Image 1: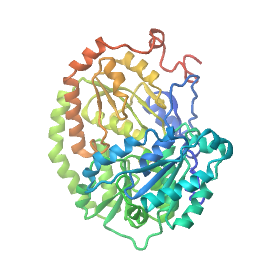
Image 2: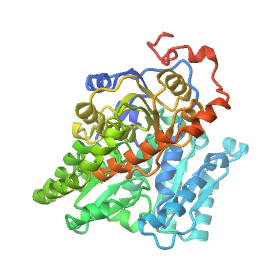
Image 3: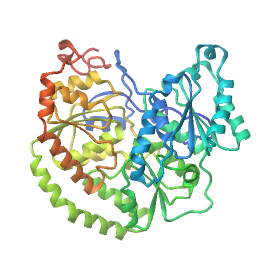
Image 4: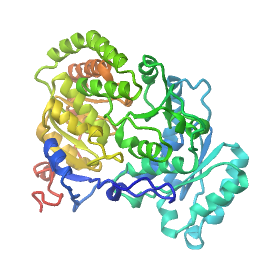
Length: 491
């Protein structure tokens, strides 16, 4: 495991840094065991699509309240960024942002001539113009495949602009072709933030804990209040100021270790902010571990035990009643790695039989090197093995093939567009975008109620199945899902 290297402009990709993989077919227990023994990635002889790291980096920095973002590349590379502006305006009231401002997103719009003569001058002029128009407190420059291919010296341009404008100008190197693991984009965004924004602590604060997360609802304020602390959310809805002094927090926790692996380790290694290694609190057993780890970090073990006991007394009877209603039901999960593991734990707590999962990649260990952070291993230990466990970087043809074979009572997804495939097959499908929705004992209950509601109201998907066409051929649906994976039936 390579240590964090903030002296270099680009982050080592996950395939090299963490030995992450995007190809596997087997069981969850087999994956956990083999991951500890140097599991090698498997290639596919056919690939339908890939996620792009640029988009993942963008979703981290676009939501910084007082910063601007420049996509250095063709304008098409920024065509999906509007969704983060929408996310900001819709969800910001949930996180205490009283006056959400317009997102400041720009593109250098590289043309064919720029790929011949270079786009560095265009970028330098663009940075200057963006500052004159927005007076942002920081400017993030996202590199695209075009900028990487022609070899623009983005780092030098950013450094010169930083001297001129006297604000952080942060190059984020997230070209889509750099990595098959799309979450490398998160690492690239956080690498830039740690390099250029975060400063050594002026003093250590005992009343603040960093929370690395997406844009879920604010549940940590209530939880932390029991310990006399408050959350500093990174990065959605943060400010340049709050990011700068995140080095002063008492500790760092993560809503999703896949997301925050790199920054959590960077804050600990470079700025002395300890990371709570326990995996996030999904499922009863892991919720107990997480609160105990939090209590130990804050030297408030008694308070943690009291909080756990209170939560169990309030929610366990309700969860037991819900479990009885869901008895005998089956489910399938498709999601990114960390949140997919969380959904497996929630389903296990609710007593549903998980018939399989399609997760978008797998990290054998995270940047902190701790097995405590491995929620998949914890889930297997707490709730048992999961068969038909497929690691695929959003290969929907494999998902449809597997769903058609297994026909679960429920498809549980994390990312938009995935529930469509279950619905077309007449399978009740549920997507909840708030990653905090399923946390803690209250989260188990909330998720269970939505799952029961989804399964019981299946008339729409049953009708949809009768009137929709499946784009995949009968030939493909009769093949094994791993046909195009090295070592699969297609060899």
